[in-house]
Picture 1 (cartoon, rainbow, N blue to C red):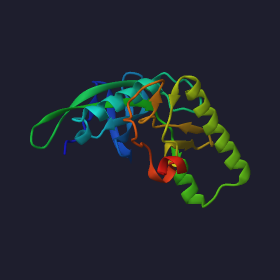
Picture 2 (picture 1 turned 45 degrees about the vertical axis):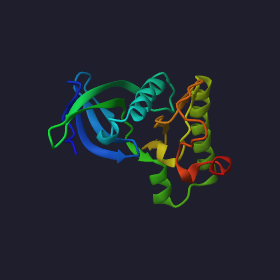
Picture 3 (picture 1 turned 135 degrees about the vertical axis):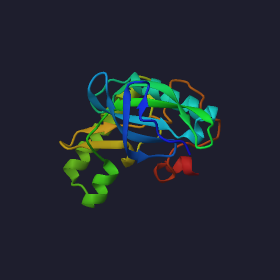
Length: 192
């Protein structure tokens, strides 16, 4: 298992781990050039050798970077850096530099509160749908929308994140007949 680098791209200081998903880890970071907090998403090193995951991760960076919407996490930069594994092998690991949202996932909010009221549920739904509508108008379908991928800041503002399995335009990234996404959030017709 490689050690997480302290500095990516000669510019981004890597801090504490904020979250871990199926494809990547997200760390708090600091942009030393612009003097601001950022979130750093790095493809897990064991997946960095798999071209399918590399292509998906790079596509996420490009797709999300093209979206400029108040309810979508902004992507500032992306690149690749070299990680050295404990055995000495080196592997290129791509990363995405994103807007840091000081808050919680919608999943955490719901878990902590138990429920949200009808008015707040409508506000949340409207915010998520507004972000998804914007991305659809720009040819990008999220394909993994769930409470884990919606961030809520301290003032209640929403940010949709994780376009890792998004489909851009007529992309054929997914093999015919294969299903992508989180099982608990698949539509009934996909589950069948």
